[in-house]
Length: 306
Image (cartoon, rainbow, N blue to C red; front, side):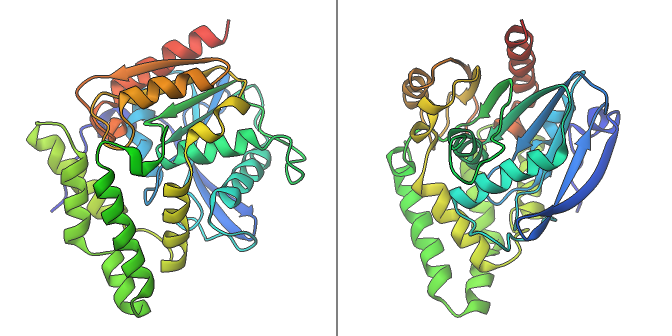
């Protein structure tokens, strides 16, 4: 049964194009929303086990900007990386090469959600690395639901430990059985029910439907296991002092992964960062409160442009 999106009408009014090109040994596919000639282009990086669909509700609520949204390598419609591992260094190298390949003109802004916040931060912090001859140079940085502290230290560190055990089990089982475990619908639904904070039944049904549809769209077991290890082994705080660009942190009052207290500490690590906390929502800002996130982004972009 198809569950209609509460954001379909707004998204339907935005022009969208699809394209692809090879990056580090695999084809990256991406979706290009809005006016090609907009003054500002935002490249957005989604979270772990997601794809470009996850950030579409935020895209639907942004105005007057161009948004480029790739599927991370090995997830959604993008091929795995062929030349590097699916770890933080590998994804950071991919992101720098991907942005370079886009040839963006005008104002360039970069946004990362959840795991994407780590990838973006690592890519920016490595601007002086030997393998970064053309470093990312955005005019501003936006991190939504940033992973601002070690995952095991979050309010539900026990769930992170369970997740570590889950992915470990998937790695040691015979490949076919491990693959089944990773795509088990019941486990995906429990995760979705745990993360959703909204009391609106229709919205909860749609969130669960999105996770059912897209949370298991990964290419193979190796990719998802490498990416999971990367997601729990690093956090934005490691890279924050090396990111001088104006930065917006869009955090959630009820985030089970990084609490507001940790987000406030994270803010102090950046040379120039502001923090917006959206009340009543957890780690699914992009699904539950995309309009509020978009409003914070637009206000930040207006201020940082002056």
